[in-house]
Image (cartoon, rainbow, N blue to C red; front, side, top):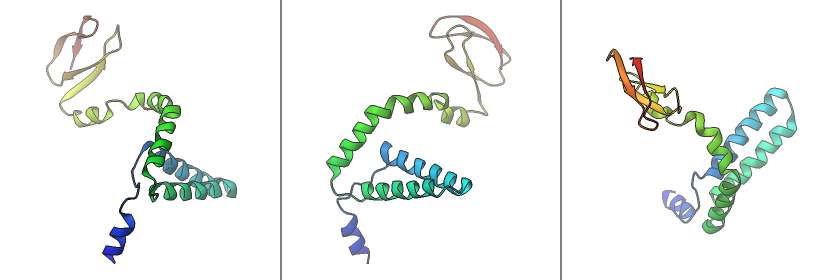
Length: 136
């Protein structure tokens, strides 16, 4: 059984690229919206997106799938980068929440990281050289 599965999956595209992730997220959103609003059309569109997702991920035509993703990123990449801006650095903020404080420079809005528990600090922005005081 495992040998059959290994042969079946060999040479398949199965990658979590931007287009596949977007199809999956849109499929989940439309499926939930279709069930919640009791609109069968949304649920059927969600099913079609799932079929496209499965087709893309089990395709052996790797070059074509990569080209599809490249076109998708070229068209929608700026939108996704703009939408992701508020979450930029979120991982580091969560990881450092016990040891550091994040704040913005009052003049240039550059994000600065300061150690916690140091009292009143004189902060100098590395980007615009503005100096200000901040209690951590």
